[in-house]
Amino acid sequence: MTKYIVQRILSLIPILLVVAVVVFMLIHLTPGDPASVILGDEASEEAVAQLRAQLGLDLPLYQQFISWFGGVVTGNLGESIFMDMSVAEAFFSRVPPTLSLAILAQIFAVIIALFLGIIAARKRGTLADQAVMGFSLLGISVPSFLLGLFLILFFAVKLQWLPVAGYQPLSSGLWNHLRYLLLPAIALGAMQAALIARMTRASIIEVLSEQYIKTARAKGLKERIVVYKHALKNAFIPILTVIGETFGTLITGASVIETVFNVPGIGQLIIRSIERRDFAVIQGSILLITVTYVLLNLLIDLLYGLLDPRVKLNRR
Image (cartoon, rainbow, N blue to C red; front, top):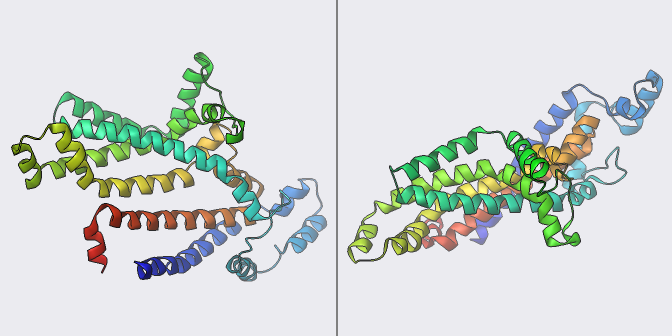
């Protein structure tokens, strides 16, 4: 197992290199100049050229990349041009809102998805199954930002139960913290709930056709015990895969929802950095998100061994 973990961590190196090259090239080849953004439209060409030289933006792209990636290897992601702080400080200061939002959205998605997926599997072919599948299709089809706007209109504007937008840290109180995150978490987690529900249904239906399930039913076990104790446990590995992947998606894809609900998280940081052409922040944030996503996949692989001992045997 230790050898496997080391191999997976070492596999990060080529992934990070490819991501670094692609992100660097895409950012630097798109129109827009940080020096022009900083100085404004009325700045002279001489002033813009002087600032570009100070920022190192007048160097050839390969030299800029070598300088930047050399810092990344040593743990220095660079300095933000606009925020007067390092990229690492800017990124990790925005982690708590995004992490809280992603965790709450994932809890919502998993609870709803497991409940609906199990019902659909047990009632396969009935009206309940069709209703769950219809909900899943709707959840996949409706964009998260559109659902977020509907939630704001109904729960925040019309009923006035929850705040329209904003964020309160956990230090302000648990309920106050959750009040501001509830609507964005539902909007963000709806699509994930639909995906997990479909996978839960498919996995449980497959397991319910196994011989040992038929044997358990023949012994007179209650259907609830057969489904929750035997079927769900053995069907959980593919479900866990989807849960892990969707959680990575929640972290990396929260930018639109954070913008709609004005949550000061990582996604909002990246969007504002793109608007201002803050190259170092964009590059560093995307690299850190990539590392997080790969490490989450590694954690899921390790959980396989805890849920199914056969996985350990196969690796050996």
